[in-house]
Image (cartoon, rainbow, N blue to C red; front, side, top):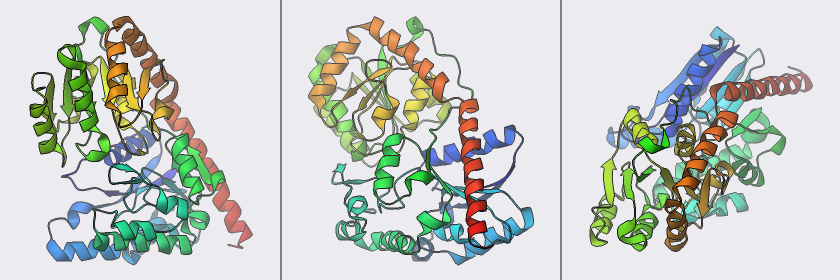
Length: 408
């Protein structure tokens, strides 16, 4: 099969799981004999170029005719069966779904976030989940609160993009298949306006993970991996560690972000410098080594994440997970089987669950085995490829049927 994979890479200064997934799926398709043609742009093209770059991003976000024409030329030359888009923001834009082609080309979009209806990408405001724009099917709340980068001016291009493509029926008429990452995400976005019969569920996968480290060779520690932002709930994690007291295990915080200095200060003020280590942003292999050697991974998110990629990594490495009972995370954690769930934003509940787990290493070890079993049953490359090919087949059938009805 000939496939165009389209993606706007995020800036290199802000590592993105979407970039990782795009590369992994491209390799997966190639390894199984498909011809993959990458159609990409990079946000680095406009970063650091001042007002010129800001304007280029703002005007490209709702509709970029140059991206549309470039993709049409690629299709005319290569004649693919599928265009699979991962991220079009800001330089590709949703204009690429409105391509004019002589032959039918199916269009697929992976929903890495909620940006098609939510200016912030993650439905969150003031540190709490907010779904007003999705529930009201209106961008007015987002503009009112300046949800993108806490700026009304910066939110305007996002609002224009959302409103324009609702009016153009881009999501109902131009896309043949959407890939949601969890049932929760599918329900939220279908309630906001996506046609349910076009939305398929395909989680991410982890290619060729190593075997889990034997339990008795692991360090007696817990890890957090993620962006140090308010939405990740790291301050809740620190409060839970303070409650746990002197018997709390070592906690390693891996990642960086705008809250780093605040988190560092909170650790010092709580007297936890000997119990909590700030490791900073680590290369992928080093981060995986940290996870593999841990006995528990914690994700105390306060927001609706589309998919906890770090949870997938933990499952693959046989590491149990404690996560907030919010959004898509309960779709990935079988409470009491391969991990535990706790009330989001509640350090008391987190501390209670953690104390129970840490006092029963046999239970944690059983969760570790179940975590790897969960990965092998749902998240291997082979399983993922089968799901993807099924989605592609359905998208092609829908496009052919649509073009036939329209007389193309």
